[in-house]
Image 1 (cartoon, rainbow, N blue to C red):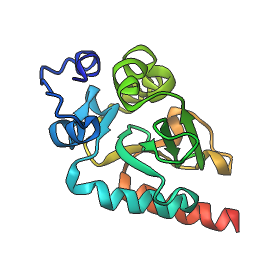
Image 2 (cartoon, helix red, strand yellow):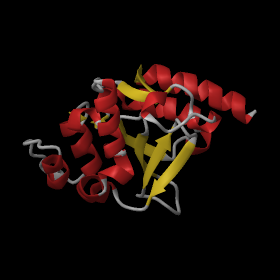
Image 3 (cartoon, rainbow, N blue to C red):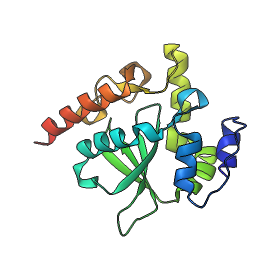
Length: 182
């Protein structure tokens, strides 16, 4: 289970299928960093906190997603629970205030999209550029947050990123988002 995902990140762990892919992922792989922090999985212990944080930033999605991970830019990934798009992947992109829909299943996202299209879904080459520029790593619970969010005219460059506590970053950007919308 999740073998292509795990192989992509040179992880030797094996996940046995119990009948619930989501729970298997969270219980066996939750709370881990992959690829030096390019992708991180939410642990079972912090899922409810992060579901609340994302729901506050995107109230129109409250109770309509199940989170499973986040990337180095602090973008959260969840399974779409909306009626017409149920099962697809949602990317909550706080730096742009967007929610992008990735039309694939949870398993396909992990075993195909990430290994085959890591640049498109995780901005991996941008991650490598930022890592080289900054000399920093992304530890669990942290992200490279935009100093000036893109929705406020910030540039999508390595010089506009800083290593941030992800919870603080989401809190600040969510407050700015609310003020910009009102």
